[in-house]
Length: 159
Image: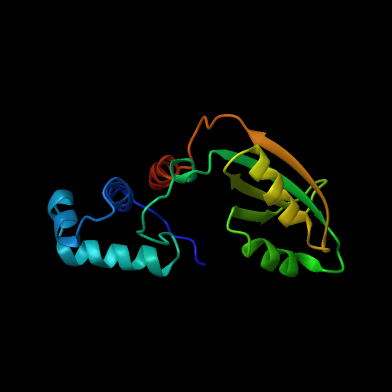
C-alpha cells in the first residue's frame, strides 16, 4: 500500500462519499464544480492506493441485536503463531477486528455479543483454540466517539 497525499479536493470528495455513499460520479463533479473525469481519476487513484476500501453500508452491531461490545487482549502460544490464531478468529462472526499488539498481550480484538451470557459463549469460542493461552476482557459501557476517519482526512489534506 502506497501512501497517498491528500489535497482539499480529495478531502471534499471523501467527505461527500462518506455522507452519501450512493452518490454518482456525475453528481459529485457537479457539486465539486470540477470535470467528471477529474472526479473519476481522483476516485480511481484513492481506490488503487488503498486509501478508500469500500462503498458498502456501515452496519451498527447494536442495531442488529449485538448490544454488548468488548475488547479482548489475547496471549497466544508462540508455537502456533499469529496466522493460525487469525484464521481461528476469522471463523467467529462476533470478532469484528483483531490486531497484533505490543505489550503484555499479543492480539487485541473487538468483539460483540447479544448479552453478557452470550459474551461468555463468544469468549469460550475464542479461548477454545489451543493456540490461545489466556484472554483478558474489558466490556465497553458506552461509545463516546464512533470509529471515524473524516477528521483525519481533513487534517491530512492540510498537511
